[in-house]
Image 1 (tube, rainbow, N blue to C red):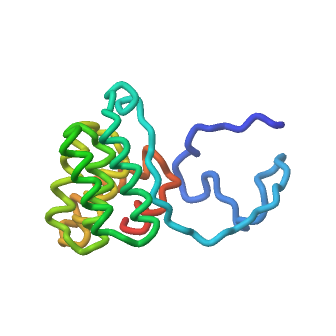
Image 2 (cartoon, rainbow, N blue to C red):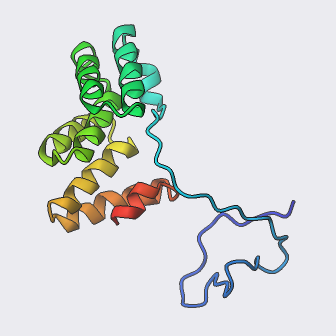
Length: 167
């Protein structure tokens, strides 16, 4: 397999340009491309902080139930379980972020912001929390804040579709 340069391309209008997206750059083999429709999946993301946080079993169990309720389209039950998880473990930033997502999708932006901010204060690099903050900022018309937060998400993880959707 040929060595790929992972550094960003040089600046300029033609730098790194490829006129046909289906044509690989010179010297590289073409790989089959499969496009699948984007399907949003709400799954927990594991971070170093969570592993070291030692989340109590009851909080993890409530979080797992919340995921199950969410997948079965029971957002109220999911919110109750997430609040239970946070009551047991206030530093459980994944639960706070997941609750922020549920609240945002239920059009409860101010409360969604509060829980996303809580998650971000515990783990400033937790991308789902930054995404929710950016999305809430877009909905509330705080575009400069949204651009800052969502651009940071894209910089850290360019393949996150929610950040691109609101950016």
